[in-house]
Structures are given as C-alpha cells and as structure tokens.
Image (cartoon, rainbow, N blue to C red; front, side, top):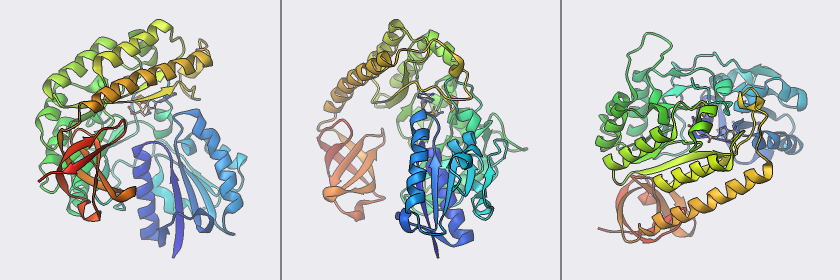
Length: 432
Ligand code: SAH
Ligand code: F3S
C-alpha cells in the first residue's frame, strides 16, 4: 500500500475534486490517504487561484514539502493554479513531478506515471465522467452538477482555469445522489460555479432540465433528506427557481447571493449582469417567500475605480438585506482577467480601511441576528464531532449549532433549543 497526502485549498469544488482524486488513486493504484506528509509516497497540493496570496504561498509550501519528503516521494500540483501557471510551476520548482489542471483531475492516475507531465486542457470534457465515491464525510455528499463557468466577471480568473460551462447529464447526477444518500449521506450538496444556470448547455444530446426541475427530481429520492447548493448567481434568480426553492421542503432555506458590490456602476464594470435594484428586489422577494431564509453573500471591496460613494452603496445593501453571513475580500488583480488591465486602482490603505469598516459593520448585524436566536428551536442534522464532547450540525437555514453528545448523534436529526448564541456557532440542547 502506498500513501497520499493531499492539501486542499479554495472552494467546495476543489474539495470534491480532492475526493475524486483520492478515490481514483485508491481504486486504480492502491493508495490510502494519510495526514503525514513527511512519510507520504505522493504529496498533492490542490490549489486555488482566485486571489493572489495563496499563489505566493504555494511555492514556499512546495519548497517545505520537498525538503521534508521521504526519498522517492512524488509531488504534484493540481487545481486552478495548476491550470493557470502550467509548466511554469515546474520551471520555478523543478522537483515538482506533475501539474494537473482543475478540469483534468480525472487523469490523476495517468499523470503520476508520466514524469514532469502537465495536463491543463480547459476544453477537456469531464461532464459525462461519473465522479468517484470516496467522501470526506459520510453524512453529506458533494455532487457536481456543472463544470466551468460561462460568465466573464472582469475580476475573476475561474473561467480561464476551469473553462466553459457544461452541465452534467441529469441521470448521472440522480444516480450519484441516490448512491450517496443510500450509503448514509442524507444531505446532498450540489456544486457548480453557477448552479442556477444549470441545463443551458450539455456536451451531448441529453435531457434538458432546468435547475428548478433538477432540485425537484433530486427531492423525489426517498433517502435524500436535505438539499443544499452553491453557488447560485443573482442574475439567474428567476421566479421558477425561487418558487421551487421556497416550496420544496427538502431544499434547505439558506441562499448564497454573491453581490460583490452594491454600486450599479461598479457592478457594470464587473460585468455581473444585474444592478443594485435587481439584487435588492430579489432578496426582498426571497425574504417574503421564505421568512426564515438566511442569506449570505460575497463582497469585493476596492475594485478599480471604487469611490467612497460606490462603497457606501455596498454598505447600504448590507444594511437593507441584513445578511446572515458576509465573505468579504479586498480586490486582488488576477492575470488573464479584464480588470487586471484597469489602471484606476484604489489606494491599498483605503482598500484596507474599507474592508475593516465593512467587516465591523457586518459584525454588528451578525451579532444582532444571533441574539434573536436565543431560546429558538431548530431541526439540526448532526455532521461533526467537536472538541469538548460536542457534536455539531446545521439547521435547515444553515445555522451552526453544537450540543453535548457522542458519535451516535452523527447522521441523525434532532430538535435543538439554542441556549447560547455566538457569531460563528450556537450552543443548544436537544429537546424531546
Ligand atoms: N461562482 C463563484 C465564484 C467563485 S470565486 C461564486 O459565485 O461563489 C469566489 C469569490 O471569490 C467570488 O464570489 C468573489 O467574491 C471572490 N473573488 C473572485 N475573484 C476575486 C478577485 N480577483 N479579488 C478578490 N476577490 C475575488
Ligand atoms: Fe467567477 Fe463570475 Fe464565474 S465570479 S466563477 S466568472 S460567475
């Protein structure tokens, strides 16, 4: 038996790619996963390239792995930075044995045998490839529904690293949901860069199904109890989708609505396809349809040309929507993107001030929302054992709650009353 150590950076799609590579390596090459990189036969870093900092870190990390690895062990770089930098990675770090792009992960068992191989074809079609079964969690299954992204947001490198968008055939998705849920994963987590654009393009002659119809079909599988997904795009939040989201009891009531900026002018520069009014109208409609929905978002501060007034528009949306969670980032210029050519950068100090202000502003909203949860009862699905004798899970609307308990709770549902509130997670007691 050989051992593989994999470090996964970035998004849930990378996590699923990691699961798939581990399964392929185990089935075809007899590898088992280890968390001891010093003694592994194979070391893989599955990378993210959405922002610049992790890319810088990659090379220092690689150097460290190379120094400490056991003699003869191989090192590979996979994922979005692999797609983006390709052979340059081997030029900069000649001890790297292979480079495998985000859209080529199915070729993992080939590249480990080809010294210095670089597979980064973004036209490679993995949409009809049945992803393998190894799952990091037995209680929740990530399932890809599309690969790539057809949008051209001017700040984003993803379409250049993951290629054009193709929907995965519906029968493959349904089979995967069925198999995973029958094996115990009652929660299915659907993945794609742009999930609610599902069905617009398939690579062959497959049944055409919209995202709303897909949700409906998956919910008919008895063993599936909960369905989550990420990420929907605000532009594609049409009424059909919102209606299915609101009325299907198996679809969890949390929605990620990546806003990026509250200014219509900046949104135009970002080529997001919607404006402030559309976003606010959709968010309000969602709250009207599903009163206990929790909405999260992504924000980029200091996009080129962002003035104080533009930034205030973003704060205004935060104030109006009152998101449960905000993931905020300073704009990071990325190669191969349109925005990287813009010369009206925001002063880095102003960018840092804006980010700090926005995070402080949101923290007080998060705290106020958390306070309203004290004493409330939620249906929790337990997924993870935590330190201190706790087991944690999520409510339907994505609130993390932990209770004292043991492993027997994992994979079960219980009604939980919140006894202590917090910004990131709540403590509760199971009620009978
Ligand atoms: N389709 C995915 C986007 C993937 S990138 C989604 O909608 O979630 C994830 C997040 O990273 C984006 O929503 C954006 O907020 C952030 N991001 C992407 N490119 C960035 C950049 N150049 N600088 C800073 N943040 C960026
Ligand atoms: Fe990136 Fe926009 Fe697609 S943020 S992943 S280009 S929807």
